[in-house]
Length: 132
Image (cartoon, rainbow, N blue to C red; front, side):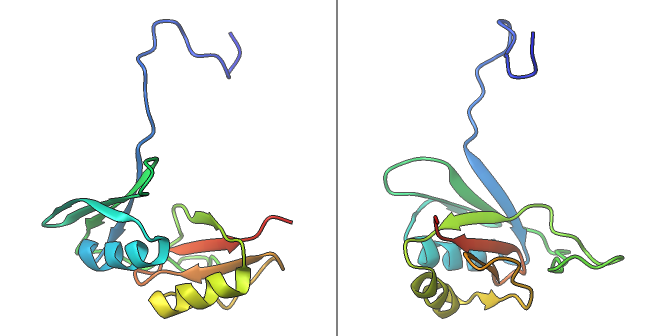
């Protein structure tokens, strides 16, 4: 068996969501709901799940009172990002303007011409990019 094969006895697993921790789950969910135009699927104290209107992988948000903002770009001894989201845009400049209006901050470090690194209100980096 190669590493790409699933054993016949493995259960069926479906990737359903990415969960981001934040000081306030509802606040961060509101940012991504505005940014992506998605709908709220679940909203309870300390937990919000949003999903694309046509279905697909969701984003969930969990309140973590001790959340420490990650640093971008990484710095030794500072909180490192655990993951980042890549979001394709058809117009990079318009997408950046939309993200900034929603509450994102443009990161100081911009490693590529066709990608913009932004920080959400909880400090999680995410990339807007265009296909070249």
